[in-house]
Image 1 (cartoon, rainbow, N blue to C red):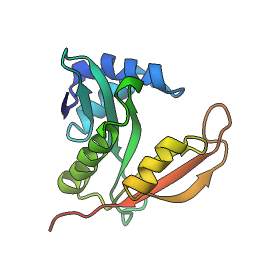
Image 2 (cartoon, rainbow, N blue to C red):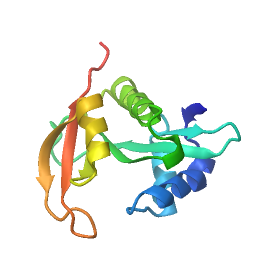
Image 3 (tube, helix red, strand yellow):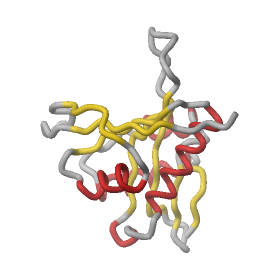
Image 4 (cartoon, rainbow, N blue to C red):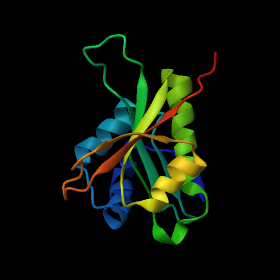
Length: 158
């Protein structure tokens, strides 16, 4: 298996991995926008036949009115096909994206949303990667489920 930076032509394979595993799906424009705008942050995992079996889609949050706000990254979506789980691929994808957020964009922290019921993902984020729940967002998902908004402080190189 090979992990590499995502390219614009990968969006179909990334979207397929998303559709198979997750109830939240994105328009094609969003996939391409992220890959083109923040090319250092999104990664894919390919199997030996070149099929995309996992991905992480990430961005740097757009500037807000508050010019003093910290620069931070956000994980929009991460998915690994079921047959390839528990191999450490999601952890590797997350770490690569987080490292790029800190080194390329000097991000202070990374955030993400996760369903309250997604215990496996919460375990990865909290127990393996060190994320903490920053707040609960009521009714965040289209089906009304609440989300944990989680954060991790990033260590940027001097």
